[in-house]
Length: 295
Length: 277
Image 1 (cartoon, rainbow over the protein chains, first blue to last red):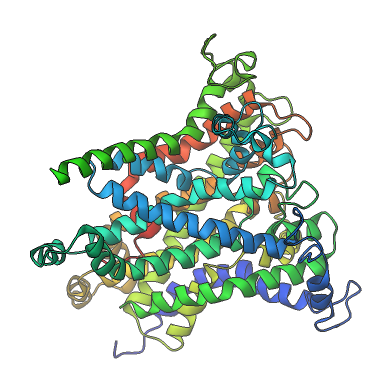
Image 2: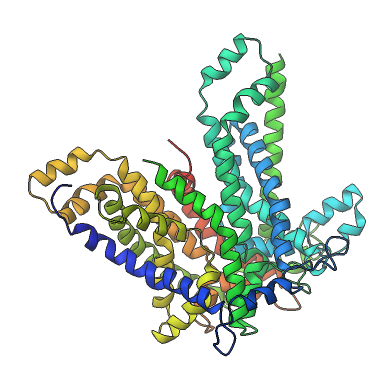
């Protein structure tokens, strides 16, 4: 574009105005709130230390030897520790199995259902599937002989509530990782495998030396998006347990909401929101860089 | 021979995956279509089996949180909150794809980073803004917020799509004296229908599925959206599984239909921008 052009200004204005009012301005305001005391004085990082030291965030008296509550930050870490490897592995496994199967698109659609429906339904499922009377999971557990686990409603007990919500999250999110891996697998040229076969490579060696290395970019995408999902998790837990019982399935996003709109402690809520945002920044920046890098 | 065995195994495993993954939905469905007394000890008991629509009627007319009204509310909000952001984002995305201007890269980066922000980071000030603007507990308020929050990813998706369009057509139109806006409206948008379908289908679904923003902005009982009503329906001490399962089916059926109809566009919209090609 050689001549001076004012078109960009007009075309961008609606989007920039809306994002500024409803996203950027409130973000800055929340950050500012996190440095204030309840009566409006500037106290710097005071509230941060207070929040980080509280047992609601990290409870080292109970973690890891006693049952939850372990604190919201540790619970989010548990989400990442359990949910991330499970969805990664299952998504890759499903994608590989379904690659060579007739009618695979129907099964892919089924696995993808969890991505389509509201996440609050995932929360209801966490309660419903692990119920001691009507829960199908507990029937299976009874069948395998795991009676202690089968005879309780998981979301009502501190030992199991967190795990129930995480597993429900696995059911919901595996579709994403499967779809990304399926697309990545489909993009690997058949000639690579044919060449390897001529050299006498086994299926296992082909997988290790061709498939896995070529899946690296897809894996990175899944990891980044999944970690974001796990950090920001709200609906599933809110609908299943509200963070309970006794905080045993509490996560940062819900604790922030409760602090702000139930306890009306806006400053500590702002601190929690800011901490949560700081955690999401590395994946967010990665996404932005990848997006800009693509020409 | 070896190939045949592994194909059979793959089919069996695939079938197992399908069965295990659909089981939660089947569970909900089975409870939804049967009287509660038949499923009190598990929906897998089929000694008595009397399918009925009673639970759906009960959910729709639930005494404290009638879902029928919630579905209508969600539909109104999602319809309006899908059209506005797509148009506004398309304008911005076109600008990012075709024009160069100062701070372009920084502005784009900032917008994209907003895509990943936790909504908790805006909750408190947003609540206050809504009160100050008189938009708290109104559909307009919720629609505006959904529009703003939908913009970043739609801008990213459409910008990437616009970059793949041949620029020659636009240049020819410019030579013929068409203005930038005319080119955008008459040439770029019609060429982008598949991409517009992708973002529209996804944006509708995300607004329909949203819970947090509604929780923040809408609170009077008659205005609650469908997802809120589902959660409220789950009593504090007693969970009415019959009505709740029927309700869950009713709330999920809308996005599931959209997915079934627009599957190709839908999946593209969700993962297209993260995968090359």
